Image (tube, rainbow, N blue to C red; front, side, top):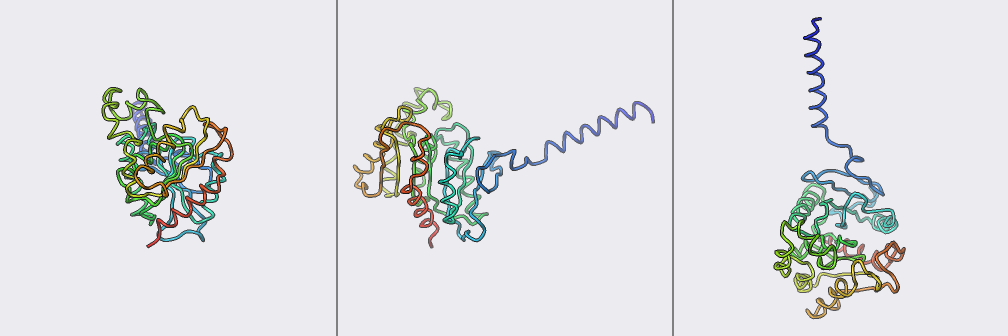
Length: 275
């Protein structure tokens, strides 16, 4: 066989392999590592996941928790017990990795995409319970403020509600496609803490747990400010705040084994699946 022809076949074979590799979908483990049984997949080329209850515990429509922040390492092992309680109650958990978006409109667009896919193709309930841990609070509340009628409840573990406290205007601005000055000027329309009256007006049930020594996500400007907004709006009875004395922004077991939070999330997720 002529050497030129052999070379041509080698190049053709290499091109075929490269093309095949380019179109082969990534394996679930390559998309996201999960702490409990479930599935990982892509939505608009963003990693997403579902943690599924046992087959015998699933329902139609399926009660579920919309979780954030779904970054590469979240949910993590510290949360495993909590998520096991949800699954044991027949409640699924799902989320989508939107990167360090800090509640930006772009992140909301990806949240919409996952929500639509789960509610139309997976028979998930149209009213999940939201669960935001730390900066995940920005993600879920920013989205909820635009669609309070879509949710059955909101839970937070030392959640961020004010992007001026974390990550700060300088760090949040790029995620919003704005300069720090522009983001500051649009604080009232973009910052979740400024948009909370929409949730209070809808009386969306809320449960928060936050440490009183949190210097990363200060209690006063975040969870306490949230409660103050609800109170001023006449919805104080719709929000519960548990203050963890002597705790900061850490892995204290009480944050992730809070039975009150677990019971609230399960109750609200099941309520969201009711006819």
